[in-house]
Amino acid sequence: MSEIDELKQVATQVRRDILRMIYDAKSGHPGGALGCADIFTALYFKILKHDPGGFSMDGFGEDLFFLSNGHLSAAWYSVLARSGYFPVKELSTFRKLNTRLQGHPATEEGLPGVRVASGSLGQGLSVALGAALSKKLNNDNHLVYCLMGDGEQQEGQIWEAAMFGAGREVDNIIGIIDYNGQQIDGPCCEVMPLGDLHAKWKAFGWSVLEMNGNDMEDIVKIIPKAIEKTGQKKPVVIIMNTDMGYGVDFMMGTHEWHGKPPNEEQFNKAISNFEETLGDY
Image 1 (cartoon, rainbow, N blue to C red):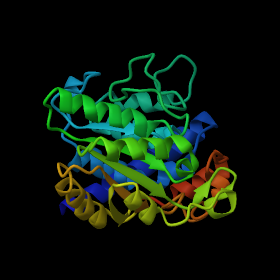
Image 2: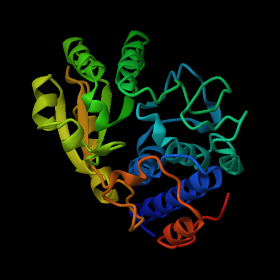
Image 3: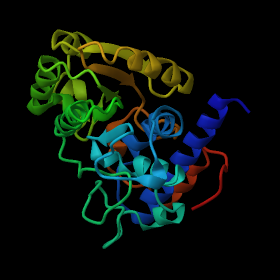
Image 4: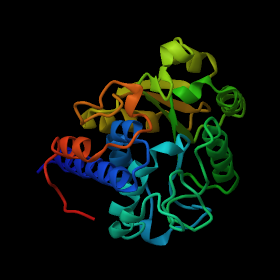
């Protein structure tokens, strides 16, 4: 089996995890999590230089990842568990009271892999830029990654952070925007049109790339190109085109599944889209 096929297989398992976790909890955000299963898989199983067994909050000597759109937590928890940060069986505690796997990532319970609470949209890029500057001050040459939503691009704090990153030449950060065109209240173009994101980020002084976030081959081709652009006195951002709900036929391309769990019939229909791979949790 090729490396790409192995990554695709893991991404399929991540999607199965997402559906089971949200169905069991009767709460959660399946749409964006399903759409981003491929990028999470590529990052944690190929791209990131990280140490699941030696997690530390400062992250010195390894790449860091920050999830700004924290409602995608089910996808993040799945790859954290399956890459060795905590036991896979803990996924069954998703959104349960007094557990470490809260609906939005939190730090109070000390979940390995999570360095900042997130979910208040618009804040993640600021945090990631601070971490990237810290690495520079500590002579740590590793990179910082930050995943954002397209709805977040309507937040003023994003653009303040964008100005800061370029103005301070923070060139050890790669931002990734999940551009699925959907947010909780409807299509982004109807809620608050985003315009030409590529042109906007370029105008703010960032190096800009684009990729298909539901094509594993494109992901593993474009992210190394983004890495090559680091260290050149400009921050880097990737506009990642995805389909919300990718992989589940009746969830794709609509905002209706942004934050709604499936019922039993819908869950069984959804899970039938995927082959059984890598076992249950």
